[in-house]
Image 1 (cartoon, rainbow, N blue to C red):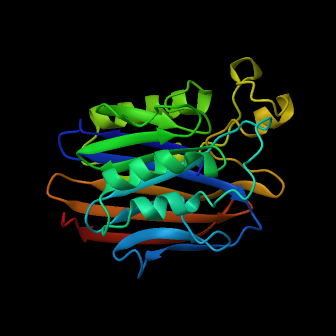
Image 2 (cartoon, rainbow, N blue to C red; image 1 turned 45 degrees about the vertical axis):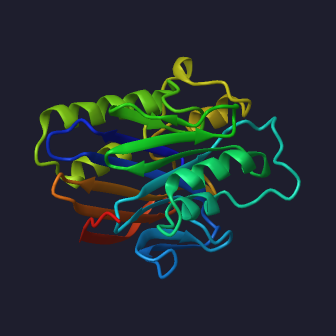
Length: 258
């Protein structure tokens, strides 16, 4: 997952609005979003290499999403654990999320660099192993996460947050297609606005759009989540291959907190 835009705790109708793109190598196998048997009630796609997921929502209202961190000069630890397991652990209703986050903080050095957002529509937490003491509550409002710290002002993050903020302020009810339009913007940003993450200007430019289309790598799926104040959840995933739309999975259900 390489871009997560979200608004929580602020909208009069939707306490949680999520629009996210997963960028990955095209040849890494994955299953589309479905209802998992374990953890029970989890709706998510599945990484068929590592066995975990990048983003999910449970029928009890737990939400989590993970992004990798772009620091090519920082090698992964020996025998690094799959980061997708972080999300599935956080979405296991048999263990409290607080305990899982505390345990994650204790084992963070066993993973390659990551960011994770986790919680419920009423309360979201942010955790990263880029720095010590990074287990923090996210204030209400519109936020963006890519492959750096939460709300790092990369152009795709700033642009996406601005677009989502305008929708959250002015549009009700929210049409999911409007959120997918944001996620589908494929125009690179000007060179003078690009971050310097150590991958060189050409790759920085190719990775700068919200929707990425490169040789062998790009946006594999888009996810939109809307949860209203009556607890009705809509989860929509659109999958892509080589930049071309392939299929859509849609789930609607009633959140039943445990």
